[in-house]
Length: 512
Image 1: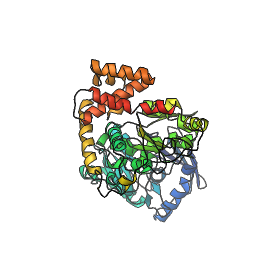
Image 2 (image 1 turned 60 degrees about the vertical axis):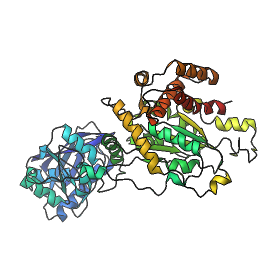
Image 3 (image 1 turned 45 degrees about the vertical axis):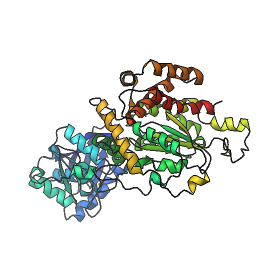
């Protein structure tokens, strides 16, 4: 006898259909799984046989051959348990499945027949809709995630018995699981900290506000205890809310990485990733025998914070250059090539020298000039060039620390940023892949970052005096565009350019 069930597999942050086929022949009880299965898939036959017996269903003593097509792509994970079990039951006439080819099926089986959640439910539901299937059958714990996809019937089940009953009665008859997308997406984030906690540092807070408004990369340089980490950790509290498209893209990455909690629907708040400086290049950008997303992809549409930047290995920092330019990372292996999106806001913090007191008027620096240059030289010039805003974070004065007055709250700063992002949203309407000024390409810079003669002269003077690169020229224009948006100005004025240039001068200072 022969039977088949439709399932799916992930490749990068996308999915493709997998046809789970089962045929039986007379002989002793034996299972053969073909179609490039990994160890987790090979072991599935033990979970499946136990689940079938413990669900009060008979498993005849045959030789079962299970094929996962297409057979030239490696299959991994435990999501094939349920479709394999259904295919075996149908091939042995223990279950009569109705329209199994019209519904994608996925789920991990426990030995008692219960279903456990799996990874990638969102991308599977998107692929099922794209292929024109009627719905998707999956564990109940994954239902909210899959139900975020409109135009596909989501049918959650809790056990193998329930799945069999669903297909025997006709899955098209069952009421699909639905969620209120607007309610989920409108949930306000709750943070344990606020920008009002930051004493002083008004110029630094202004620079961070500009960076957050346009999605620009920022480097904070200052002595220990000046508040660099404190400021960076409060950055998510002022970031504008994610659009639905951004939330879907971010959730797809977290879903395939297995980082989406059970019963979750969407990643609705911008991620904040802060890896330790001992991280490897593969863990940062992604990789492995079977490629997995790295920290830069998990920070997609959010913040990647690298504290103590010079302490990161040189090869680790250098792999950031392509993602910062292109907003994606491509991982190539002998059998496949996978692309992960990585459009993130890079926030870095570092000391000005090994002892941390270079330029501090209240503490004497004990480092030699050679030590300072070697320390700063750990961060390459091309990487610094890709960071839009460089900010000097001075030590906080006693009067500011002891002040009883509270600073501006994150809520009020966020309101200004939302207004600036709304301007950018209208500007980039109809342009796929653009959410903020930092993502503009050469064509968009020419169209939206025009400056008058006075501004052109100012920028020309800055380029010649500071020796800035062509990349720095583009980034100055992007930052100036954001400053103009915060000021609700349709034009980029000389004062906007002047402030943007100020944020680029520090890298020249560091390398002299």
